Image 1 (spheres, rainbow, N blue to C red):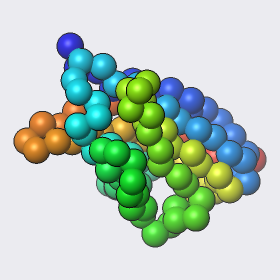
Image 2 (image 1 turned 90 degrees about the vertical axis):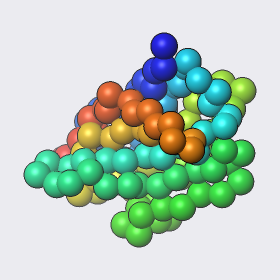
Image 3 (image 1 turned 180 degrees about the vertical axis):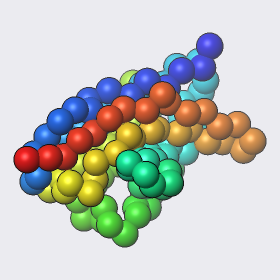
Image 4 (image 1 turned 135 degrees about the horizontal axis):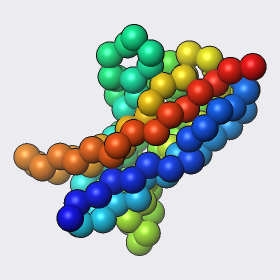
Length: 116
C-alpha cells in the first residue's frame, strides 16, 4: 500500500522555523522526485519546490527562495521541507508529492499556520 504521510505542521509565529517531514512507504522512494505543494486559504494549489531523486538538485518557488530548503534521506524514505523566516502568507496546507514517469502519489496534507 502506497503511503505518503506528512508531519511537523502546526501554529507558529512570524519569523519562526518549522520542518515538515514526508514519510514514504509502499514504493521505491529513491526512484521518485519529491515535490512539496501548498494551498493557502482561497488559493490554488502551488508548487513550493522539488528535489531530484538523489537530492543533487532542488528548485523553489520564488517567494520561498532563500527561506525554504527541501532535502531527502533515501535511507529513511523521507523527504523534508525546512521552512524558516515564516510569514503569514506561508499559511497553507502543505502536501508532499512523489512522481516518477506516469506514477504519482500524494500525501494527505498538513496545516501550517503562521500568525501572531
